[in-house]
Amino acid sequence: MEQKNDFIEREIQKITLFIRSLISKIVKGVDLNTSIQTLDKELKGKLDFGFFEILGLNEEVLKKKINGVDILILEELLNLFYEIDKKELEISEINNLSRVCIILIDEIENKSRVFSFERQDIKNYFKS
Image 1 (cartoon, one colour):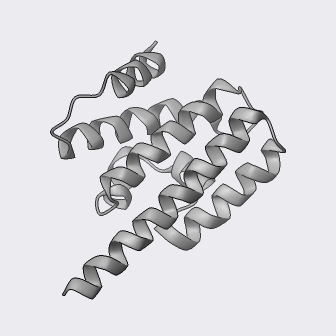
Image 2 (cartoon, rainbow, N blue to C red):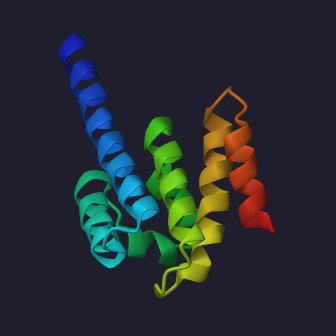
């Protein structure tokens, strides 16, 4: 059982590091289109949904897709999507990003017992 938990923790750490790497690339403005394509491909491989796919999902299906995802990964995805939205990239269905982020925030708040000012700021950003 210990090995299984260690494996899961390592996978969570790998995904978290990957997302943080993408966040830093987006913040720096390094080849954003390639970063978004990489994000889409890697999410499909690691989490069973891609960036562009998640933008097209309705609320019910989206909640089912993210239900089993670890809260740390959801937090990192939220931060990544926030940075993508701030860059105002020309992406089809980007207008759905705020809806997806609000759903992510609600899911995180349902799972977490910790209040986050940063999360609240992001929530206010997407609700305005």
